[in-house]
Image (cartoon, rainbow, N blue to C red; front, top):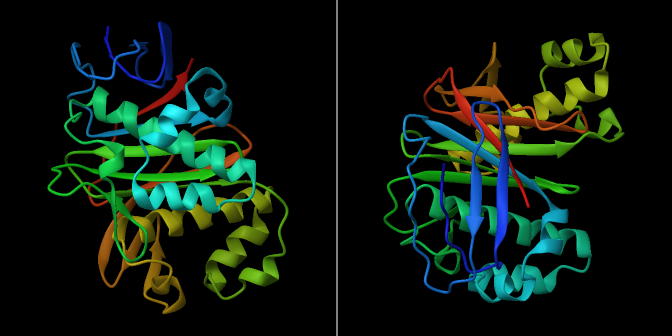
Length: 256
């Protein structure tokens, strides 16, 4: 059982749907955050958390907005669509909760730094995390053992011709031979994108042809990234990439 103390809500119980186990997240309206829990996931090398934007209906959104980093706040205010604003806030909420859950609450979301390619990090942190979101869902991956990347995409109709140069002939053959061509395309797309995000140098790697898929791994200039499909729900494709291959990954949904 985990006890969490949080500044976003008053007396709401959080539960998580988990592939490995189930906990409850207890939040209390305290500005001073502190943790008091037994970490059930200390032996899990990679943890993945996801939430739907509907979670924002039950938290203090303005308080969360006030906690955003300067760059995130600029992004938030620059978005025109409510959907984009909600995805940014949901991602920020996931990260704020993960920092508490993993005992890293000395880091605050307002302290986020970004690389030139937009990869977020905390200065001096001994862990890695990565965030992705699409449609109504945000996902966050965390590890203190390996560098990683995650990508999630909403499976919707597209014109394959717009992406003809992205994949090799062999991969396109697999896509067109699949019973569900659209889902197969997004599975490969998230596989590519998660590795690119893990590497951190951005989409230029795809454009330069420096990526190669062999089996379920992505090689970037000879460096191997192991990929792991993450099941969210049938509407999405989601893939995690890491430098180390793990047989056990904790996947949890945050529910209020």
